[in-house]
Image (cartoon, rainbow, N blue to C red; front, side, top):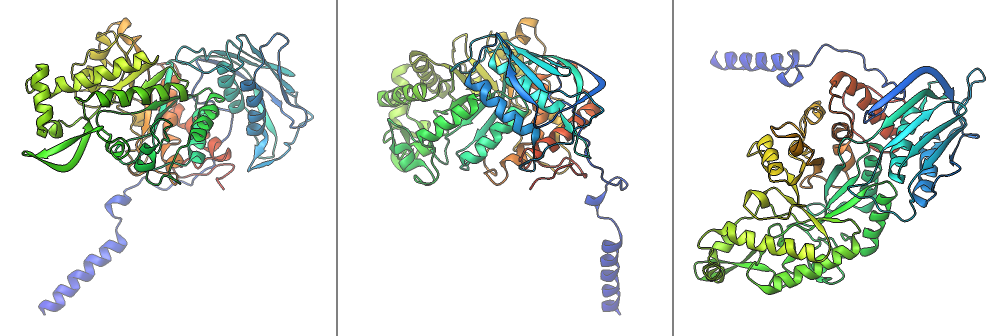
Length: 540
């Protein structure tokens, strides 16, 4: 009888599981998914935009981009003309001539005016990205100080164009006055924990351009691997890459990425993080890392750059000279985060050096000694630098033009932002934009509502916040999931960094980020869906 009751109870439990909704299925009442409408909405939202119901058609056979009579001309704009023509008229990988209505006026030309010389230029923190766009048939105009402003304006123009269900290409009469709220709008990619092939780095650069990001923070090396092929120290990648033949960024690869980025108005800021995060450096640079001890005996382990040896600084001088010659950007990211002092504490030679230098047992002073040397070397080779917040937190005296990246949540972000700017230092925020952290459901709202200036401080302090970065750390990310994990979630960050501070409506943003996601899918990127529904053109 007891067996029967047990069996009956088990059956009841199983029956309940099948007929009752599980807790994780506690979802709203079913609503039929609908197609995301393509109506020419723009993301990031421009500073000022006026659109009317008056609409024009575009014909693939007759529409063209041209230079104004007194415009500067250059390769950046030339290539952008070809690229955006294809982005507008290519659907599903094929140029399909849109239906042209005989009852509507036709926009036949967008005339470009670039005021500043743009041949061979490279973007900088100070570059102008302002533009004025006027869409009116038969000829629209796009005026910008620089080529970078033209690129941003062409992206807006391409987003204003939409294709109706019957195949007609439409754009409404529109005027746009636009400029970025912050000068530094970055995406960090970690290519050490997993190698990311150049193909996917370029796809991400395309997505960045579609969302008006302008800094590729290339966290190119770290503990797990050293994929950068150095000219002066070839053993770093020969002995530190996952595979020195296949998992490697050659000098040609790096030049290719830099040029691909430049043509899209994106700066490439490399990061060579020391003294920690350097395990992959050890085999290729003998003596660079600190030997760790158990008591008085070396235990065979190594950790962090050895701050007491002159050869360490000789190595870094030569490497940073190479970085200066390879990467044209004015800035290099020097890292300086998450330094564990245990190995330094265990090493008797380090202990003696500490005594000699008068550091006592304060290993933060030893870290400061190392960092200060690296900062001075970087300045001496003609580069400015960005550092993670620990450099400042640990009391290192830095130059006034230092840029500090705030990434930790403790101390609280507003406290840290106030502290950094109170010292007269420029700040970049990334704390709330670690997009490698994922969760089930819609999570982009938390990125959209993160406000870089949400701290107590003077207007002068607020002016020192130059922007922010969305970070994609590589523990669980490689070429298979990079784009889907980043996009369109990073689009929320793009709007926060570009658009006016008062642009905060989640309802309005939802419509535009939906359309932006479908737009990226149409352009060949596997941007992930935000909720049930479908696009006019699906990813294939």
